[in-house]
Amino acid sequence: MGENSSNCKGDCKPIDLIVIWLVIISILGVGIFIGLRVWFKKNYERKLFSNPRDLTNLMRFVNNSKENGLSRGQAKKELLEAGWSSDRISYAIKKAFKKEDVVKKGTPRKKAKIGRKINKSKNTR
Image (cartoon, rainbow, N blue to C red; front, side, top):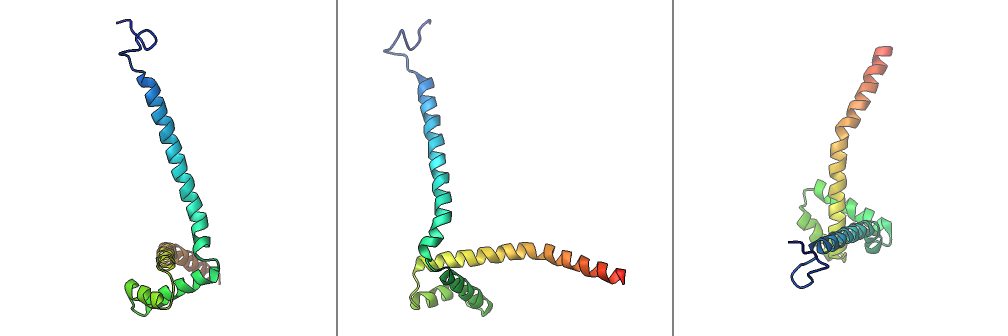
């Protein structure tokens, strides 16, 4: 029972060392994953759209087509026929709908603040 990894090389396994290496490898893997995600977020849009106006125009088209009753699929089809790449179209659609969700979530708070200012100004007169 007095065996350890230094006096019984044949049948004792240094489990602690394996666990330490697994933890180090896991931490490195997570670090690399996070680093790639940050890089991707910063650089992917610039890679797809060298001219920022292209993204703005695509997002406007997506928003206008939605307001006019076109589905995402129909809008994508029209953009593909106009010569846009599917990567650019998909990115613009995702970004347009993401901005729309943010605006919808923020709108009630902004309206409430404006309403309070109006009510205060009416009460002071």
